[in-house]
Image (cartoon, rainbow, N blue to C red; front, side, top):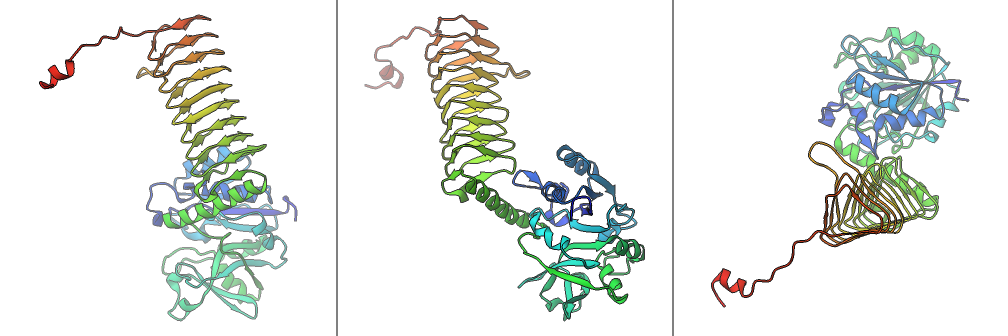
Length: 434
């Protein structure tokens, strides 16, 4: 089945009250991206017709998803008059005959895990799995390999609560099935909601076959709490790092490393234990040492750390960034910054050495200013470079210097120190003893 033969509807309208958060549930992040992003990404590989049903914080949901994807249809659910999963399907224009209905709180769904729905010709296919503890899930009653009905936990009898086969929450319908049964849904139940699951019982009563599809619980895990979110994060991290290692990245103690979905690697790379790589970071032929953090930056042919922090919008090439060095929104090419420095809003050229304790003073409390350092500059330890400042090629900055001139000319020595004084026996005079 090609991408033009299937429509996908993603239900993302709920509040997610069990998350105990003011943020819409589907916008909680897993490995750096909102849950809903992961579902749309997987869906877009098998369909060109994707509809997302929104309601709670609809503007934020639509804005964030539109920043990642084009050509997504957004439909606002009338949650007041038509609450529930069935209500979410009202007023949706279905383009193709095959319709896959997904939930917006299942970030672990993969394209491969959806193939079973596409390779099945039944008019209705519903996902199921068996759980030792089915609490919180709708129970699925199956007889002769056919689904008879689904009972929401709130409406289940004590006997039905002992059923271990549960609804995984994903369905595939023929368009004609939805066209017939969505208008017939009723909210005559304990929650007074319109359940999509009621289609199963109505279709069964009319003699339609409902095929159960046993799926992997991991892929269809729903996120309803912060604990579920943490569990999903662990699974997603394992997937991300496994793929990267299979692609050639060396990781030391990978369980201690956090790598977000947008991070990419090229060439021979090493990531040591305890590192955190986020955003749209690119690591190319580089070594990231223990405990380092790299955010939304590019690192090429360099080594970073241990315990370095590369903040967003930095570009590091052919450089050594040592322990306890922080770089923010700076471009460093062929630079050595061994330890204990802050480099912010700077441009530094090759052959330059940044000594321990050097600080670019880029912020005056109102505005940020740039520091430009040329080639082969030696910046001595414990120096402060007060921006805006340009330091030309072949300059030496003496240790302990505060540079306040806007420009240091090529070949110069910059030094600012008070003359040292030694006062004999001052210690004894101060403390009154010898």
